[in-house]
Image (cartoon, rainbow, N blue to C red; front, side):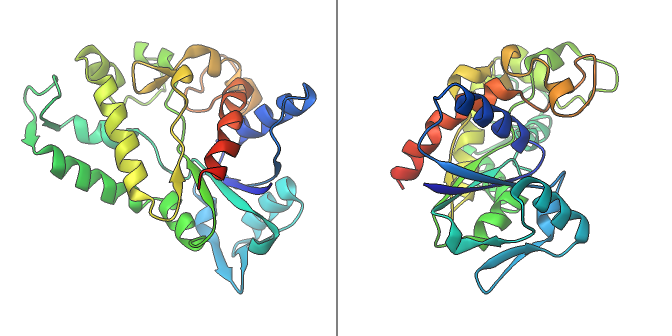
Length: 253
């Protein structure tokens, strides 16, 4: 199956994982071509006459570097796999700092809202992400979507220059699994033109974080940093955990 993989920096873990599976002879029956751009670079692509192409020179160069061409002819692929594209559990954590709903434990000092309101609000917010926009470009095609991975669990301890989104407060209150479930439900509901692929349970810690083995060496391999300072990106082991789920999900669509 010819699959076009489109994403931001989180595509690196998928590429590393694919290369490792190929080297070991365990790669699924897929032929992926990777197209990526950092941050929200994919926002600058458009579809015209069945061709998805960047409208900025620097984004076109990223496409050429990874996929060998600066445009994607949609009919050349059997399916599309969207990676990251601003869909992150951080949106829920920001909401959770000030709001709570029935079933949560960390409610003190927060505005209490109906769970249905929380679901509708978060679904609307995720629909407005780059993931939702890109999936809209591909409507009518077979599209699979994977969110940005949860951040590595070591970030709970706090570290200089590392953003604090409220992981520890949510986990300490016992709300990690409930927030993770809300994340999966609202992201899936926000993507009418794609099938959402949740992060594998084997890689998840505390409901909203990624287990340490899947972040090991990511600072060096992906972001080029040293000292284990990158909690947001995952390594090739994470990618290897994803790929066996892709073909069954596409065949079920």
